[in-house]
Amino acid sequence: MNVMTNPDAITVDPITLQVIRGSFETIAEEMGHVLYRMSFSSIIRESQDLGAGLFDVNFNTLCESESTPMHIGSIPGYLRGIAETLEDDTWYEGDVVVHNHPYFGSSHTPDLAIVVPVFYQGRLVGFAGNTAHHVDIGAATPGLIIDVPDVYAEGMLFAGTKLYRKGEPNNAMWNYIRRNSRAAQQLVADIEAQIASARLGAKRFVELLDKYGEATVFGAANQLMDYAERMTRQRISEIPDGDYTAEGWLDDDGRNRDRQLKVKVTVRVRGDEVEVDLTGSADQTPTAYNVPFEGSTKVAAYAGFRKLLLDAATSDVRVPSNEGSFRPIRVTAPLGSIFNPRAPASAEARFTQCNRMIDLIIRALAPVMPEKVIAGSSASISFAAYSGVRPSGEYWVFLEVNEGAYGGRPRSDGPDSIDNLMANTRNNPLEDLAMHIPMICDRYELRDDQPPGAGEFRGGIGVVKAQRVLTTAFITHESERHTDAPWGIFGGRDGTVGRCTITNPNRPGDLREMPSKFSGLAVEANDVMTYYSPNGGGYGDPLNRPPVKVLEDVLDGFCTVADAREVYGVILDIDAETVDMAATEKRRAAMQKAS
Image (tube, rainbow, N blue to C red; front, side, top):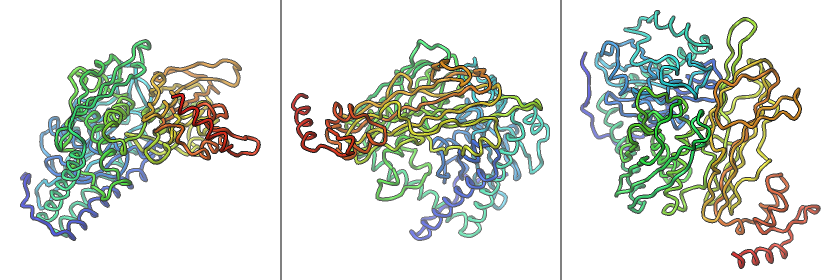
C-alpha cells in the first residue's frame, strides 16, 4: 500500500479555490445531515450532538460540519489515537474503524468516532470521519456517569477497532456491542448512521478528486488552511502582547461536596501566537470529572478563540473551519491536573469544565478586547440522563441537554435560553419525548425566579425545565455553577447561579435541593426534576440602560419594580405601564453622584 503524504499540489486560481472550498463545506454539511437524519436516538436525531468532516493523511482538518463546536477540531485527535492503536497497523479499502478511548485522543467515551479511509487510484489520500454522542455505551450508570473510579467504568472502550475490514463486517465486534449496551438497538442503528455518513464523505471526496484532479484539490486544501491560519494570526496580532489571567471555581467533583475546584486560565499573547496555560487549576479528581487533554481541553481553546476572533456575524470575511485556525494556538495543562489527567482516571463528565475554561479565556482578555468580549455566561451545560426498565425488561434511556444563557454583549442583551460557549445542540421536542419515553414535561419556560445580571445590556435569561418520570427511574445530572455566578463586566452586575430540585406532587412540601451533579439517583413515579440554568452577567453600567427596556423587562416579569428603581434608577408607573422620565432622570443623577 502506497501512502501519499505530500501530493504534488499546485497553486490554484481564486475562482477554482472558492469552488473547491464550497465543495469541501458542502460535503461536510451533507455528512452531518445524513448522520442526524438517519439516527434513531434523540441526542443525535434531534439535538444534533455530532460533527463530521474530511481529513488528509497527516490528520489535518480539511473541512468540518458547522455543528457542535466541541466536535470541531476533535477528530484529528481521534485520528492520531487510531494511528497508535490500529489493530493491524494498516488501512485497506472498505475498512471502518470505531474509536473512543480518552487516553488515545478522543473527546470522551460516549463520543464514538467512525473513520473510513479514502483511497484514490490505489493510494491512501485521506479520511472521512464523524463523531456523535451515544445514548448508552454500557457504563456503570445508564447514559451518563460521574462518580466512578476509573476509565474502565465508563463503558466500552474502542481503540483503533475495525468494524469492517476490507468491506467485511467484524461480526464478533458487532455482537459485543449489541450485548453491552442498555440501549443496544439505538446504539447499533446510530453507529450504522455514522458509517453511512462517513462512507458518503469518502465517496464525495473521490468525486471531487476525479473532477478537479488530486494536485488541484490538495493545492486548494493547503491554500485554504494557510488562509485560515493567516487570518487567525492577523486577529491574534491585534491583541496587545501580554499575560492575561482569570480564575473561577467549580462546585465540586460529584463526590466531595465540600471541595470546590479551581480553574485558572492564563492567556499569553506573543505577536501572532497565543498560549492558553491552565497551570494552577485543580488536580485531577477521583471521579469522572476530568477532561481528556487531546480531545477536549485543546479543542475548547480552539473553540474559544474562534468565537472571539473569527465570529461569522462580526467578521468582514468568513474563515473556513479547518486546521489552519488551530495552528497559532498552543495549550498547556500540567499532567495530573483536571485538564490533563493521568490514566486510568475517568474523564467522561468533561462538559462544564470546558465551558468554564472558555468563559475564563473571555474574562481574561476583557480588558484588552472590550468590544469583542461578553459578560459571564451560564458556561454550564446541563446534561441529564433519565432511565428505567420497561415491563418487558428492556431499558429506556433518554439524554437531554438543557439550555443556558449568554452574558450581556457590547451592543445587545445576552441571548436567552440557548446552548452556549462550547455547544449549540438543539432542544428535544416535548412531543417526541412523550411518544417514546415514560416522561412528561410539566414546565418549560424562561426562568423568572431570579433576575439576570443587570447592565446597560442585561445578561441572558436561563431556562427552567421540570421533567416528571411516570415510573420508577434513575437520574444522572451533570451541571455546574450553583455557587459561582456568571460575572458582570464594565459595571454590569453578576448573574444568577443555577439550581436543581426534586419534588413530587404526591408529597406536598417535600422539596430536595440537589447538588449541581449527581449519579444514578433512584426516583419514584411522578418525581419531578426541575432545573434552573444560571442567568448571564450584565455588560456596562445599569444606569445607562434605556428606561423603556427596563419597563419591558418588568412587564415581562424578569425585573421587579423595586429593582428597576434600586438597580437601574428607573421610576415606573406600573398601572399605566409607562416610565416617569423626570423622576428617572432625577433618580439616576442622585445614584451617579452617590457612586
